[in-house]
Image (cartoon, rainbow, N blue to C red):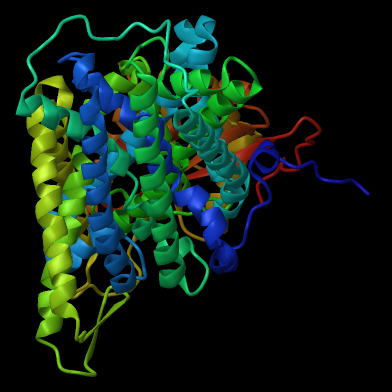
Length: 637
């Protein structure tokens, strides 16, 4: 018995999953922390460094400010955690800022939130992968010239893993994520013990990145604060991906959010304190994490393990975007603001088109910015805090609606049940405070990072929203054109003119003729004459084989395949405006791409020529040429 070899895509991605299995592609809290929290957790690898990088402009004497700045950011994290926990229970269907804004603020704010979040997810991939590569080049400086190539390869690897499905990616990434957490807490534990016992060494042999000093100003401190707020990116990811959790989804998602925030706060403050204690320096040659590990452990195995775990978590951070970007893009596509292809699930029930778009744009950014974290950071987090602000503002409006409801009353909106809540004032106050704080932080980001590159985002976001509405208006126009409402569109037969296009008389053209005869309708054979000698040869064959069947010859003095036929069809349409024109093409299909490229393949040309003519249908009747094929059609049936 002959066995079928699995295809390359099956080997790479796994066996296809049936649609009914989508409800089983859910994960528990432990793997969910790896999938949805890796972005936020990984930011501790560079957030402290970004604070120091800005403070270095005023001199190393002001590095002590990194600690109060980190504490202020941790306080903002507490506010966001409480706010998004409320969002998770209010919208168990997921969608985060996009759904909240659409339900409570309207379409325009929703599309702004969608543009901000999609942009952030793309930048998350570019920043986290670039930062991961920076860890690699810190340990192996000889790889620095190849950082862009390494980043692109890592994005391709993440793409393949995520195309295999949510369960597959969570299993693949859970161990590396928890490995990082173990190594990070071990580094803090050993470092704090050395600090407490007075055995903690100081960083040496590192040149600070800043070459010139500036006076310490409030503006500089705000720049450092905004750079450190990159530690908060990814906080909204869990609220976007609630459908991926096992039941009870909202409770599991909320608990995962609390765990993520607690771990993030501990690591961020701990690393900032330890960096201050060892006098870590922001440097292009060596990351702060590398300096901490080298100072605490020396150059031994634990130093390498710390760098490996940090590199891995930074790469895993991109997985948060791979989990959320396709889902959000599918939501917007379902609302007709993005191409509908983004709603299609691949063989492994993943929104494959979203994965491809995310990977492609992220690789483009990595190439343009040469995998530089510092160059990408100014573009980063503006969209995040805009999404935070819109989400919290939307929740404020929602609690106002709740206040108008009666006890026991329920209203369903996009899969979310809105009920009266006796604690609506407290919850509204929390969301209002969160909205104000995140709006202020967003303004700080825009002002302090504007010259460094944030101006790009202020142009990009409105452009994306404009594109979204252009797509939406197109789909609305299509829906109106296809609607039966308001017109008396009678269902019934119309006159039909069938044209069989004849290039030469061979078995492929005979198959096309047989197809026309099988329709049981009158048909006309048409030949476009480009070469008079070939036309004469065809007429001779036609007279010998086709008896009295007429052959219409359309001269083409300028050697165009389509213009004479288009003119001929337009004449038929003028004679019978209500008639349909059916054009049948014979064609050759080969087993391999390179063999197919050796043939004219004109079917696409004819389809393109008639795509704007009403009432014209083009059918291709292929003749499959197999290597062991024996022609079976030698006569007209």
